[in-house]
Length: 329
Ligand code: SIN
Image (tube, rainbow, N blue to C red; front, side, top):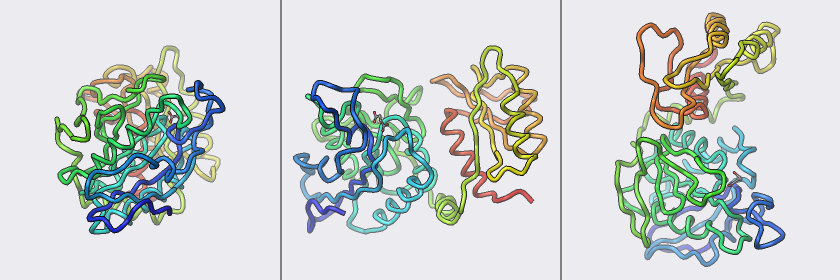
């Protein structure tokens, strides 16, 4: 851990996980040909400054390109957040993260912590070595949110906009303002060091502790796969997963999320295979491929739906649900 400054009234802890925000390219003009996760989190804080009465501390949790995010890092991250949130003088936490799976980590942390203090993920679309990097302002804005006394829950801050963990989604491959909250809209804006709140913060929920304890204990986490419905979709991938289960695979599939069309509809061949999987004890959930809206329930549906959750978030929700439920009898 690299202490940046201590002995202030309240602390904001900045946890580094890697990403473009910590990326370095060989030329300052290169915004895409860089290696993610190269610059240490303490270095990312140089020159950022903190709001009055706030001290910053940095801790490197991992140093990865977030496309390679995995359960081991998630578990450590959740544990480090829980540790710091329990410190009375810690106002909140900032997590520097790659943009590519930021929404998954945010949803995961909200599911297992549902904290009464803010946990703020932030990122950058340009590497730290860029002519005009976007990371420093994003970090500064994230610190402001983490130090806000009324704030709570897991949120993401990018390009001056605060998104809730449940809604946040990466929607652009290149633009600096790469995230969106869909129908729900942003939770707040950060303007010149002040938070302008538009909606409620994600709710604190002590029941999340049960999920946290399960992720800490579990030797392995349930395998949940995502399969998409599309024109000419087939059931062969579902059948291959079922065959693996029947043959006693070490990590058999326990859940399948179907990235469904529109209001949760499936190609008939995929649907038939999914029903076979459900009959064999695999948990199956439909989540819409649409970027906005939710699946509106219709009578007579044999496969349950994920409501507003995107396929990647529905996968995390199902994995945690299976983990808490434990092995089927
Ligand atoms: C990553 O997700 O780690 C790389 C891409 C990014 O941060 O924009």
